Length: 174
Length: 455
Image (cartoon, rainbow over all chains, first blue to last red; front, side):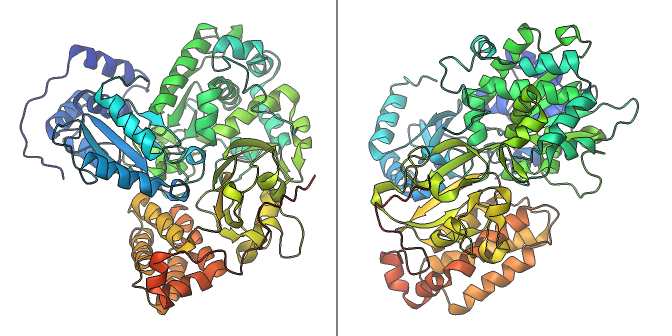
C-alpha cells in the first residue's frame, strides 16, 4: 500500500538528473509528462522501489502534482510501492507457461527461498512473485530478474537452483 | 522451404548489427522510398499489398494509414505498438531481439509515408533488454545517416525514440497505449475520435504493430503487388506465428498464410508434432483472447475441409465452430491438460489486466475468475456453468475497449466445446482434484506418434 505520510528526504544524483534531462528532450515542448514512466523506471532501478518521497521528488522535477505520479505508479505492475529484495525474481504464471510447468517452478522457488510470494528473504537479497505473461511462451517456463530484467528461459528446478547460486555469488552477467 | 520475407536472414551471424544487416540488403527500402517515391506512393503500395494489421485485429494497414488526418500546422505521429503481452504471443520480442533493424527500417519508411517527423516505439517495460537493443540499433542507423536531419539528402527529417511501458496488458490497446505514452494511466479512450484524427497529444496518430511495420520493408522492396501474391485470398503475405504449449518444437515461425494447420503442427519444418508422443487435445490459435477449439475442429472445419492458417479459414464457422487468427499466438494443449484450469488461468489474467474503467469488465472478469476457481477446486455447482456463459455475454460488447470481449470469448468457447469436462468437475470434485479429465471424446483421437503430414 502507498504510505503517503512517509517523509524521508530524497535527493537524486546529478547523474540521474542528467539522464532525466535527456529523456525530457524526446517530447515536444510542454509535453514532458510523457517522461514520467521512463523516469520512474530509472528511479526504481536506483532505489529498488518507489518511495512516496521519491515520487514527490519526481513530481517536482516534472512540474506535476504528486497525485499524477501516484496514480501512474499504482496503475502499472512493474512499479514497486514497497521495498523489495535486491533481486526480484518474477515467474510467468500465465496459461502457456503453466502448460509446461510454471506452477512447479513457483513452488520450487517458494521452498528454496523460504518466503511467500511478495515477501523478502531475511538477508534482503531476494523477493519473488508470479507475474502475467512475459511474452516468451515458446521458451517457458520463464522468469525475469529485476532491476536489470535479465531473462531466463526453459527453467527446471536445477536451473533455478543454479541461478540462485549465481546471484548469491553476484556473478550475474547481462 | 516456404518463402520468408521477414526472417530470411535471421540466421546470419551478427544480423542484429547495422553493418551486417545492411550487407544483407537492409535499408534498401528507405533508399527507394525517400529517393524515388512520394509518401502517397508508399501508402498506395501498402494498400495494394493487402497487408492486415498483425497485432490481432487484422485491419488493413494501408486503409488505416489513409484515414490519417493531415491538418495544416499540426504534427503527425507514428507509434509502434511493441507492448506485446497477449498470452501465447512472443513474435515481436523475437523480431526485436534478433533482427531489430527490420523494425527500425520499417519505422523510417512508414514515418515517411505518414509525414511523421517524430516517431515512438512503445515497448512493454519488462522488455528492458529489447529496449537496450533497439536504442543501440537506432544509434547505429542515425550514425549511418538513416535517421536525423535530411535523411539521405532527401530533405526528410525523422527522430525515433523508444518509450518503455510499465507492465500493463491494456496498453496494447491503441488508445490506452497513447494515454500511457503521454505519461498517464493506461485507460482506453472512448472512440471516436479515432487516433487517426486525435491521438498522441491530440495530434493525428497511427499505431501499428511491430510485425506490420516490419512487413512494410518487403512491400516497398518488391512492390505491393508482389507481396499480395504470397498467401491466400485476402490473407496476403507471411505471418509470424508464435507456437507454444505441448509441442516438440515451440518457437517463432514465419509461415506463408494459407498453410494447413495440420502441416504447421505435425511437419518437421514447423512444430514437429505434439511433445512426448501425446495426442493433441485443443488449440488456441491466435493468442489467449480468441476462442479455444478442440483438436478435431482446429484441423478441419465443420464442412470437413482442411483448416488453413489464414484470417478467413481460422474464422470459418464463426464462434460456433471457428476461431480467429488474432496475433498468431498458437497454443497447443496435449491430452493431459485441464481445460477448466486453463480457463481459470486465463480469466485470472484478464481480471488482473482489466483497467477497471468499465463495470462489466471490472466486475465480470473477477466474477468469472472466482466461479472458475471454485469449479477447478472442487466447490462448483452445475448452475455455475451457465452462470459463466451469462456473465461472459454481459461483458461482451459492453465495454469501451476489446479487453471485455477478449475476456469473455475464452470462457464462452471453452464451455461451448468442453462442457462435459466442466460438468465432470462438478460431479466428480474429488477425482478432479487428483487427476485430469483427459482427452475425452470431443477431440479428434489422432493416434499417438502417427504423423500425417499434408505435403
